[in-house]
Length: 587
Ligand SMILES: Cc1cc2nc3c(=O)[nH]c(=O)nc-3n(C[C@H](O)[C@H](O)[C@H](O)COP(=O)(O)OP(=O)(O)OC[C@H]3O[C@@H](n4cnc5c(N)ncnc54)[C@H](O)[C@@H]3O)c2cc1C
Image (cartoon, rainbow, N blue to C red; front, top):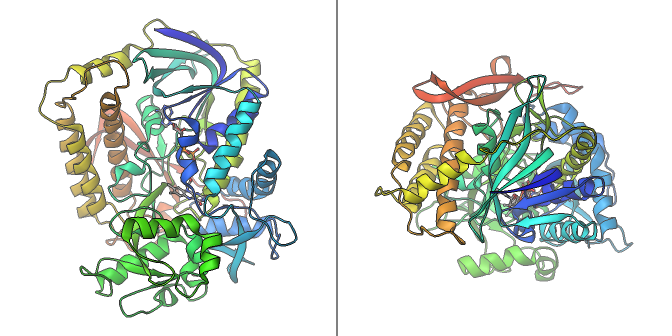
């Protein structure tokens, strides 16, 4: 076992991890551990844009942005976080511009801005142009820009190092604090321990719990599951965003920018059905509303295609030159994967699992919560892995690229500040034992179950029972299946027993993470007997502020059992209000 020592260790080299690294790396010794090469992180797949009330093309201000974020999140948003994000958005965009990001420009040379769902002028009066973008490859540009700046600041990367555990110890005052992480080097199969004063989780989302998803194969929620296994609760995990426009049957994303640039959703009658569901902002309503409306059209028999199981995204009224300039990649996806020509034919689309609103609970300094009140000194999280609760129960488009930049920067600054005055905590010789035991157990497993098969069954049941519509019955069905799969997981056998580049082994570990998170998600969904944002219970179709205006917190706890589910404990955390009272959510 090799041991390394850094002031700050960052888990993940996506937008959040690298934005944090730029801050921490300029202040203290910083290492970034990442299971992918940095520029392959999912941030690079982001298409549509990153919002900030720059008011470059239309009147706008950060307070309207705050309001839209809170209303868009169906009032489960922590309002202090939303204010920080909307206020610091402007600087976040300008930071990137100074680092060299090639944003699209207006004829006068300012950063151009376009429309996105739920972003409005003057508290919902009309859509506003708030999203800064670089064609439909904004995330790619952000990731490349951040990577170049990390290189410039000599940030040390450990590429293809999979973090598999966190080392938590009690300090002299009896406070549980992080002392380091345990990681697995894909190339050699060796286990390395990284001792650190501050640790930042920036390991991204968990979309692979579902079959139909816009997420990359690697988004298996590792950071969330590792936190849970180390006694840290997960917040608001029942809230998953289903993005309205995945390519039908595939889930590959067609950015909301398509509707921001004028695209229209139509049913089998050719009707622009969003006029019925959101008369004011129509196709640019928040994603939860659009996704449910689409699913409803299909249910009521107005779906398109041979099986009437999707709706159409119509771009045919846009000039081909406009499409080529603003939406080149996503229209190419439609051609490549569905054989559809967006200049002349509407594109078949259906909701796809896209974003985890929940995650590791944090506050505005990106500090991780140990429970509803206390923080864990030295532990930070930012980006999709975290739940600083700026997105509440539904995230607005372009608010995630913003979140990773604002809270990534904050995490890097506060983690470095903490490390500058803290001491290293001791890491004992057996710190990696649990990880080694887990890896050996999988490697030596001689059962008959296959990882790919179990993952498929998990994804199938989550698509069927935990998607846009949920009921007590469907959620219980999902839970029963997950419990069955957990049992079968104990008898998996992998084919590759070798040491080097053993992805077979790591996919088995990742499946363990997915199963654990799917269970947390389902348990939280069972508890929330109301409908809010991305969580829609057909048996409780209304929002119920009296009973459920609070965050869910799920803990791993072997001693408890609830609703027939063993090993998890449920609790809540209050929502932070500053000045926006919950209102009815009409668009
Ligand atoms: C197709 C698509 C389009 C999108 N478009 C937009 C958009 O236009 N606007 C917007 O605001 N949002 C968009 N989003 C959402 C947004 O891109 C993501 O939420 C955001 O980029 C997540 O950034 P992150 O840094 O948290 O995680 P990621 O970019 O996913 O990075 C995660 C990092 O963690 C590392 N990692 C994970 N597990 C481990 C482990 N066990 N050990 C070590 N390293 C690990 C990975 O290697 C990776 O470097 C889009 C998402 C998708 C999927």
